[in-house]
Length: 113
Image 1: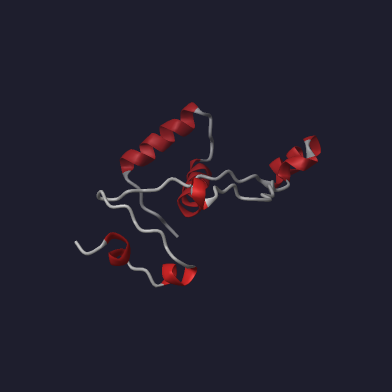
Image 2 (image 1 turned 135 degrees about the vertical axis):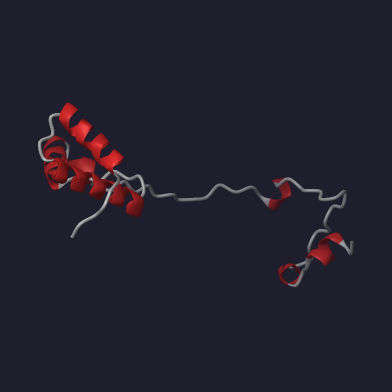
């Protein structure tokens, strides 16, 4: 399979390979295309190769384990301490019951405009 790229881009890649002593331009292009495609496909996340994973695991076996934090409770304010919001100069009335809240509409809270 052949892929066409502009002559200008090829020359730029060729110059880069020469300066960086890369002998196989085609392998470099394929490797770079794969990296770019992975970046487009998966976003900017760091993948660790199998060789890198082995080195990391030898140095610190815990480093590759996922970090999971458990949250016991979500901090909340009692309704009596929650700030009241006034919208358009009108304070909404306090609901009478949970059933009342389920059936409320914006017109019930703020009145007709």
